[in-house]
Length: 174
Image (cartoon, rainbow, N blue to C red):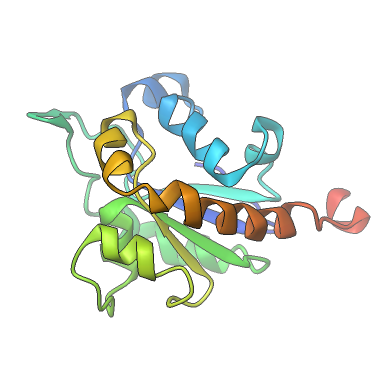
């Protein structure tokens, strides 16, 4: 997890996978590479906590399940997220990655599926963007939903570019 009082965007993902758990660097895997491509940002910008706070739903590797990693531990987000968000007054956008984050944060979500939440939620939720998990395990979802990379990703990149290109000198010296 990384965060800073000047963070502009908080990215809320699931929980660290084994590689990230071992490296201690959030999104330091194939999922992170794809996420940075989706956002249209360099590693340098992505790992600048004045731009991006990287906050998982679960703070530790949850272990291996039958078809991938287990879900994030349930006590982490309710225990820590509120105080973390309050400590970042400059937040302008929240990016919710995957069903766990979306279910926790969008209690009034009118959409029944992750696909509909991602597709129709871009302008529905106030200052919140919903994305599928960028894991290579989701390649089938991406193939079935070509609109995502064709339509949503360019809009996402424009919004992120507007934020990451807007750091003032004063904030850089923070």
